[in-house]
Length: 250
Image 1 (tube, rainbow, N blue to C red):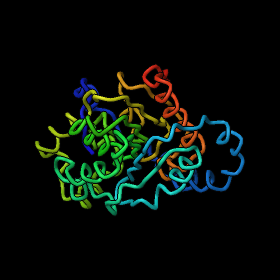
Image 2 (image 1 turned 90 degrees about the horizontal axis):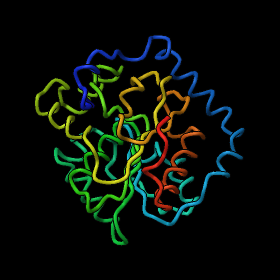
Image 3 (image 1 turned 135 degrees about the horizontal axis):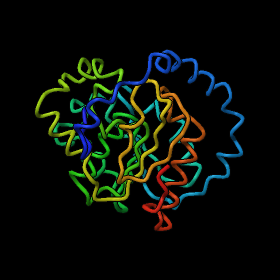
Image 4 (image 1 turned 45 degrees about the vertical axis):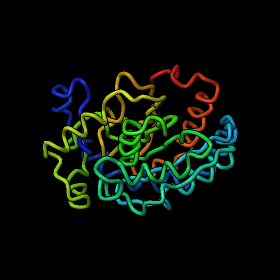
């Protein structure tokens, strides 16, 4: 999960979210679920899709089931949305050190052209990795609460990441790979982030060159939040119209 922006030394001192935000993660996520029904008008108002193929990449230790609501929403908006089909996300244990396992999955969906990748947290980092490895297969990347632009120690989950993936965030090979992942992408990209995220510092979920949309959300179940679902649909529709890269960073 460790990644460096161009100004890595400056971001090295960014702390993880406050203990108050961390403690509020589960209550906020549960409240969002309880009030989800209030946002149907907002969800219905988001623009329809163009039938493009979309692959959804889950967060750390999550599988395709964690993105089922987002997948159903995008299907309803006329996208051909798919899971990644690689079971739980255990970092390179799942996708390979050069994303080779993920690339095989993307190739299987690319019969009608490049695939758009939408990744949640660690899934967004994996999506950026795949886009840089095989730009011919990837039409665009949307990251959701993905800490790709800073150091892993600016999160509350880096120790869990090490245990689950078998990688050390201070390993020079991991640092080098993360620096590359944080670099410019060869395709349209957008970042959805929250400064009120309780698990990862929101400022490392975006960078100065990637169009970004800020939302108010916990990290837990961020991909279920109505504002996030509508933002994903708006970004993809903008790319369909050829205006995705003009999305204003907020």
